[in-house]
Image (cartoon, rainbow, N blue to C red; front, side, top):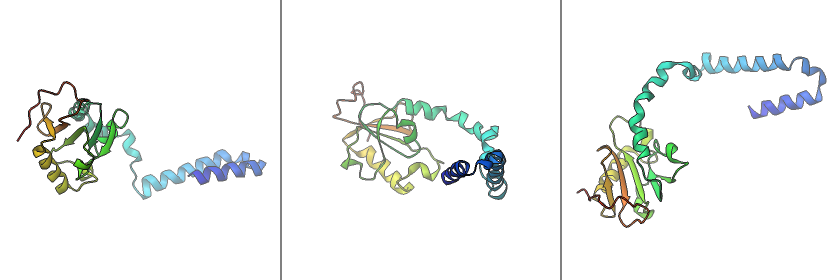
Length: 172
């Protein structure tokens, strides 16, 4: 696409008579792109104006509430589907099976069933489940599950950044 723009700009500067055809050329390129994207390859461009495509996201307010309850101080380790919502407000890294090497201040995970497998990336589902179980037993972290039993926030115990979480108990 970028090469086409440069080519047309170069063509326009070298051939003055091309100015008569530039709008026709632009319409032709647009028509070809739409044909290949929509008709030949059945692209997702039509989803932009399809109401049914957006209807499922109205029910995601619980996820936005969970993201809003994650403390904004310190290093946060989380899974792939939560990370884009937190990049501007947190020092962030994706989940790792060896989280203890990084000792993040906060670990936020969503263990609901029926999620897209890409949500757990870079971990496969079985490693994600093992990580969730090991976090429950880790004496370095307190579990903040007052929001939900399936959306969990783990807080590092001796972290001065986590004021207000002193009353949490370690869950066995």
